[in-house]
Length: 376
Image 1 (cartoon, rainbow, N blue to C red):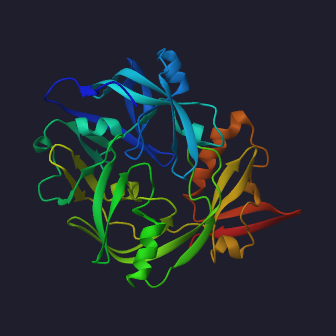
Image 2: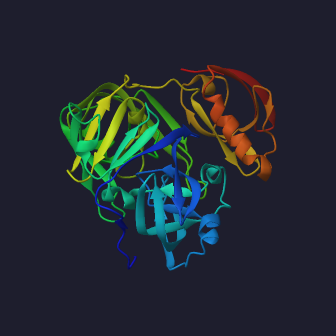
Image 3: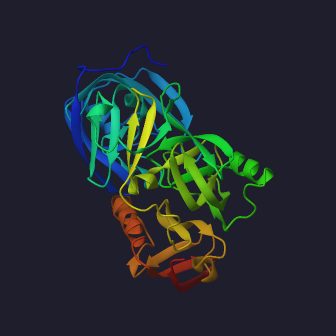
């Protein structure tokens, strides 16, 4: 795909970089071609620049590639090579990048300033993600890092290009599989459908605690097709020496399973590429299941709709149906989302998740209704 070899300047480095979590993503500041931008850190993605950055740097487009996004939707992007990315004091050279158009469907474009720091860069350093102290540390030697000695260890497998980090795990003491460690995913474990069916076939899970339909989350491509999801109770998830108990996890249609960013809410995670290890050092309790409203709003053109709905939730019992238009939430007018309001509406919808109860005005067919929905 690329006729370039990415490398890092210098043999010895130890650099701390501030991070913050907003819009459900982990952000850091980095320089692309000498210009500062805010980037999403996403270990489940290749490195991506927005079109405005590629144009500002006058990058030569070398071709195109089509892949699939988090919802399995095909996405075609241009390909280029960036001479220099600087993260903290660490300089990466000759980095292959995908170029992502800024004008994209829905609110995904609101997430990106510079783009995505992705998996191609990962094997060139050891990365410690510490959201407790709001930092990432890049090190040439894992021995220079805190939170490694005494931490739970798991194997780290590096896939082929774009070198995404893969971690073996075991479910309920028996079923073994590999999962992508994906900081762009919001779950502890997002269980792929094939693994779920095998767990049922082996009798390792015998029930589901909930079903849902729609689209699980936003992604880079066009609107994905509606799918059915299951919330599965797990007695035990073992990631190497890390033991997590009494979890409830959602299924996903595509392979592989994902170990996601919710682990970062409770553990400092160190990706030790030089030694082939992942270390998990706890600083808080793991959330077995986060209470939700049972629905997720999504921006569909100029309106907001119910994009995901859990059966039996307080939202469904209040009368919401999949694809109903949401007119207002707690009095905020969402009836007509213009292009210049899109990111503000997107942020407002995310802020609603911090509330325990909301009033929703929605349009179901030709009928406009109002309901109060609480978390469960």
